[in-house]
Image (cartoon, rainbow, N blue to C red; front, side, top):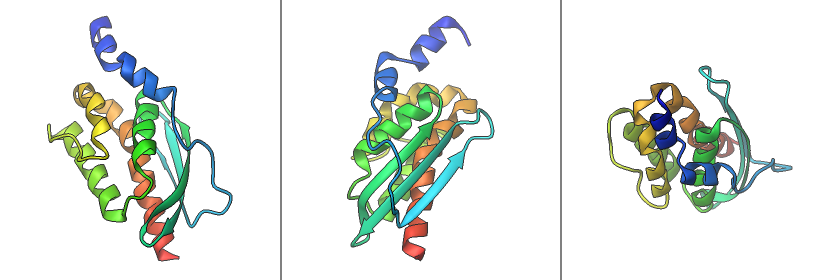
Length: 146
């Protein structure tokens, strides 16, 4: 990876997002909780959430990830409240398609992922970027199963 590639990938906006992740921490009594880890880089995201009427009523996230994983968690953190399971899974699937198949940016309110389009060319970064939404989808499924 050249210096100009790194500058493009780690833009100022990505670094701003990584430094400002909302809903950091853990919920004391979540209805659902899930941890996802990238075997490639060791990044890890844990999401705790509570539901009300089939939507995310409260959540927290513990993020130990690279700047791209942190930026992804930051984007998700701004959009997750009030979302249904299908909206979260749809955003996860759209993000994966955006990264791996040049699909479109996820629909609002998850359209902030547009900033991560430059990561398409770096397959070894995809797993870390997907962690937050994967953990949120898993936590939602666990909460519904209870």
